[in-house]
Each structure stands twice: as C-alpha cells, then as structure tokens.
Length: 79
Ligand SMILES: [Zn+2]
Image (cartoon, rainbow, N blue to C red; front, side, top):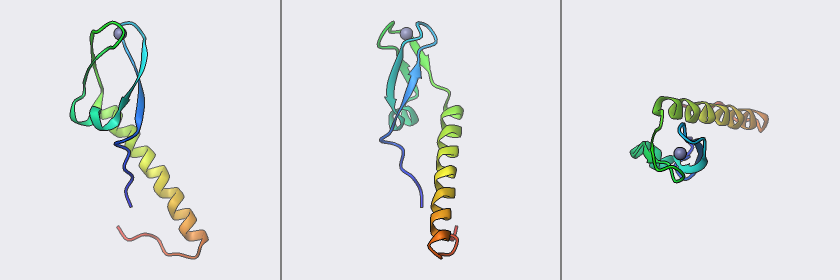
C-alpha cells in the first residue's frame, strides 16, 4: 500500500518576505521552482526535505495500517 500525497498541499514560507502560501506536492515534485506570489522572488524548494517529510508521513501511515491490520487479526503486509 502506498499513499498518494500528490494532491495534497504543503505550506511554503518565502525566505525573502516570509509570506506563507500553499503549493501542491505534485507540482513541487516536478517543478521545484516557485516565484513568491507576494514578492515575486525565486523560492527554491528543498526537495530532500520534501521527500523526507513525505517519507516519514508514509511510514507513520503504514505503521498505523499495520497496527489496524494486526488488531483485526491480519498478517503483516508483504513487501
Ligand atoms: Zn516573498
């Protein structure tokens, strides 16, 4: 089971003017270059940080699913 977080949004904070705005994760994955809607300066997204955050989100969800499956008497999911 894998999560699809592409349609989720995350908050980005502009390092130039500190404006907060939302961006689609799918957009960041394929085009991690943004211009701030407030000051219109280039904002680079740290993809490593993005993937680390996504990875830990997936892992915690998987752990939850496995816990639920275990509680229902199921076996651990084959990888
Ligand atoms: Zn800005």
